[in-house]
Length: 498
Ligand code: NDP
Image 1: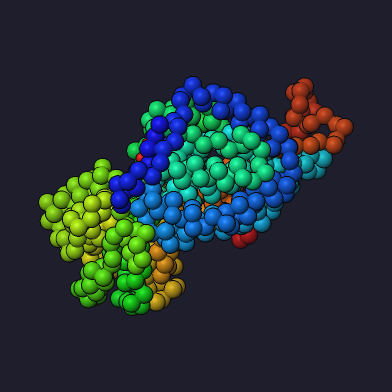
Image 2 (image 1 turned 135 degrees about the horizontal axis):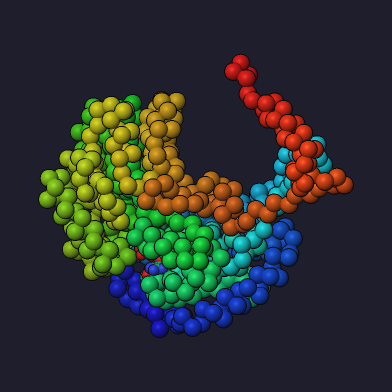
């Protein structure tokens, strides 16, 4: 059996039966049989059956939010707005857009070849059985949104939740079981990723993985054996750049939430704050005061803003990195230790100032409630500093001059750049989500997310009764054909003044 522990109270939430490696073979056989029938349904019918999820969930908002809270340590209200609502919104959005995105035949102009009565079109076919491997920090929204896109596109799914959040994983399966979706179309497996991971990757037609960069690289390495495609949604070190003309009150509230929501265990939470030298002292002063006002405690208690971290190991990793920062010469402005007044895994909201871009605490992901602050003096310098980082998930630019903000945004090498916003775009169903560099490859959500879970099938039709001019034999006539092609080739040169 695998246990789920509440990281805020250290009480046992419950347990589930673990899946063995031997079970995986029959799980995949069942998934393949279910998928074969499912893919034949018209896409509108698939979407209509998947959107049932919203109806099933409509009587369980509180139950689901409390469950997520009990496993991750975040306030239930945060679990609802960031996770449960996210899934509902995404399910409806995908239901409304799947047809126009991947449900229609796409005619492709062929230029000169059309004169030989050739035509091409592309349709989108499902991949088969997709393995969705989820992280612990958003154990409901992240994998569920990926599962929903995969299903609507005609795939079956084998889902492995994080070992820390098995009951939330089971809840996703229970919700699906309550809809009229075919048996075995989605199957949730429980157990350690290091044991189940390899056979899962070997059997899947695609792996959609969300988690750390270290694990992501292991998955890609394994997937290379079978050339299984992977979508990797990995770590981050998101930067917020604040220019002096900013609306300071809003920026302060935004960064406070953007750093400490979910105890900083967010792939795209603000980890690096770049402050212009003209406002550095005032901004820091106010931010430290605002951070002091945050209430940390048992997340189900009213008024608590910041809950617990997932486990002792993560908490100790964060603390180690904070100590590294001190050794590097940075200064702890607030926090910097485990909360001594609470018995669960609570790390105090922490701000570290006097940092420079080359420090380890600026370069490495610290997956907890820790913000590192760096001073800058001009836009060229700050763009270079933001880009000089192994990760490339999101970033955000703060200025009242939106056009200036856009120009900066276009110079930054991350998957998303927000202007005067933080974090929330991870919940947008309509926009592509994913990173550059060590933040991963591929995209989930939106049109791009649908394209990750299908294969384009190109169909080429010829209605002519003539031989193609380039077929054998290569005789005198063939030489005429070559000359003709040379003329056509010349007509395809773009003239300088065009
Ligand atoms: P991990 O990489 O530790 O685990 C993620 C998942 O991978 C878990 O289900 C885990 O199972 C499984 N796993 C572990 N080893 C293997 C393996 N060898 N093969 C296959 N699966 C394996 O990440 P965390 O859960 O700790 O999540 C935190 C990380 O995720 C952070 O770095 C964060 O930035 C990133 N993240 C990225 C997001 C994005 O969208 N880019 C979103 C959310 C988080 P088990 O639990 O059993 O070990």
